[in-house]
Image (cartoon, rainbow, N blue to C red; front, side, top):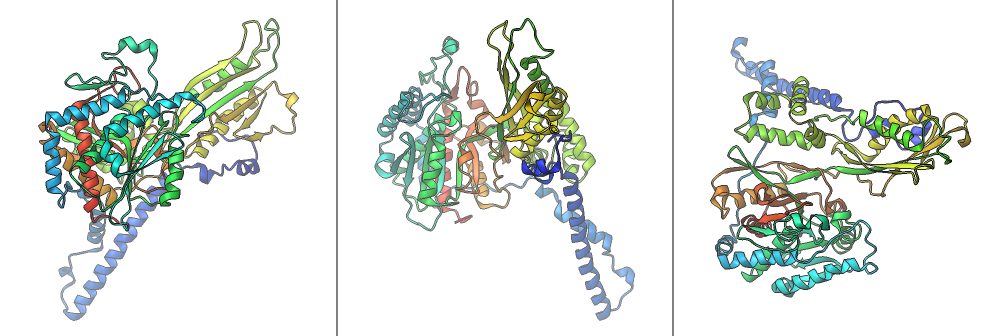
Length: 621
């Protein structure tokens, strides 16, 4: 919710033509960590020097005006250095927190809404609102045709009718626009056009249920059944709960006769589960045309939630999102009868390439400028269950390179797979194919490798890594080599001089760089979001959460959301659904998907308070 080390067997001009200059390939700091560390050192030393010169100048002035023994001047240059460094790295900067932000102008309204949300009548209505949406199987398939051509899209129309009947005030007071036949955009006009609107997004679609697993569900997968604790069914967690919670919040505010000063826009995609190509991409175009670039104050989409750790609630809105590249590796060789085989068939040659990939995973490195390192700082500052040794190591790692490497070793030893996922670019060989008959030599063999690109890297850096790693192997196996549209020649040899060909491509044309990282500490939208989360938690309608301390930390989304299309709508994108980890029965995309009813109510409260707080905030325009 990520670069290779072998030299490329090609000349420099080919590298440049391929767009793979090493300075670019380094991604967003992968190869410059040591330089960054040295630069930071000299920057802080220069700051200390400037401060010391000011101190010395003041001291000389004092001596000239009021002579005194030099020993009376006890504030030396070394003291100035210590002050400068301590000022920059004092403990409060480890993981700064804001105070809870609760509605003030709308305090009475917020209290009245909480009172209503506490009633059984309202809760049952809210649970059924989600249950009814779950009963409509808006499944997304990878092979869906275009909207209007494939009848499988039409389940979205059933959902639209349901929403219109379930939320009458929303449809009477907000302007609804249907985008690309099935995507929905609602505009709630504010009274102050100078204020940037809020954008809340979700998606209508769900992943299909495997019919072979239907009997493994505790409740039928599209029942929407509420058993007194859980609301069951596909989409109850991902992401109809987000869609229905935001609509319920708006419907409830309208019932209380709330009229916003700041406009609110709701946008609901139709195919997030296959990349948003027909939904979010068209919503983006509509919003850019209607509102313009960076027209929104902030955006909240599905994503992180909150969990209790050692008596403290940690809430983690994702401010970054990993990139993505699916690489198709195809080996083609001449066919023939398998009674006279060559030393290696295309399948064997492909296997050699895959073996090399898996024997050389991309490095997972902890960088100080990464989102994950910032979350570790918050753990050190606020998790009482963390050992003193680990807390000290995280603290020292901010400045000490040795401590940073030691921390990486500790985290790798604890859970290497998890560490690789949050710090590096991952790779997984997920698809493979080749051959048509047991006595026929396979003329082609292929595999698709899924990569989630680290937030400090790039698509091009990953492509370069493939060239560096596999081009020498292809040469050794006497295979011609083509990578991402660029042919890499081996001297002046013709194609017929090779036993076959290796071709690397973007498997589905969906390559995506990591998302821009949203600003956090000291930034208005982040502070409003954080303060709203904290106030929603401290006033939670279930005492288990209201009585505990809470902190907000920046998170990293390992997968991709519809926000991949929304980067030009706002610089402040937060992937956060305000769902507790204990509120999901079995996660998403699997059997027994269910959300706890009480947790769903807290999602409604969060969206309502966020809209109210955004309406009266002075933190941003």
